Length: 272
Image 1 (cartoon, rainbow, N blue to C red):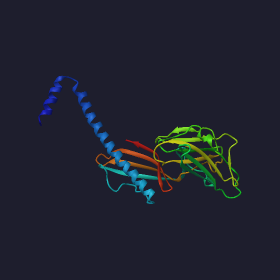
Image 2: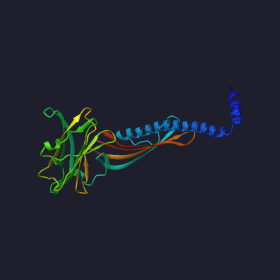
Image 3: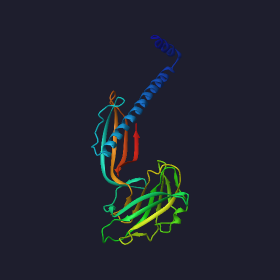
Image 4: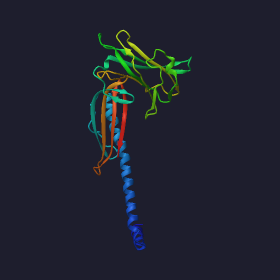
């Protein structure tokens, strides 16, 4: 077997000029295959780095700058940046206004047997100090659970709603619908004497009643968007470096927020 390769090559050389591109293609394929394998292993290792940082943040531990053990022959370096307090509005991390604590937003889902559907109620509650001027609400919305859809015209069934119009519906990247009501002037107000406003509607579907949240947007810059989910936001970058070649085989940049005892990942980018 040891002599088969030289003999084959000699015959191919005699055969003509196609030998060079054929060999280059073969070597290129091997190289690409090797790089692909390194990329897959690097991605797996980088994911472990992000997960390690998220676990540390969720448990009140300072994240490591490097995994203690090498994975798949790679060293994983980790950079964690604390971006400060953020809230989730329309599926995005938004830096809240100085006085976002003037309002509290909650969402609740209950089964309504009479309607044969789930009733979703968003409640906005006044929390500002006494003497604060009325706060006008421009938008109200919610992310509903995966597997559920908004029941058309259902918001009109609740005359006390902030809006009885139909919402704008957007299908998020994780398969859940985002519903948002843009309210026309004159904007409804929440005040010290009228401290609660609601938006109620029905949703249809099957699945787990989880990973849902609500938000409002007000016309004061010092309040801005107020979401049901608020916490510290972080940007985590995990870089996998092949120990044999010292080449970066994968990098993952994740945006996440830790709040209310939960971890929310809003962005996950993989670069090989």
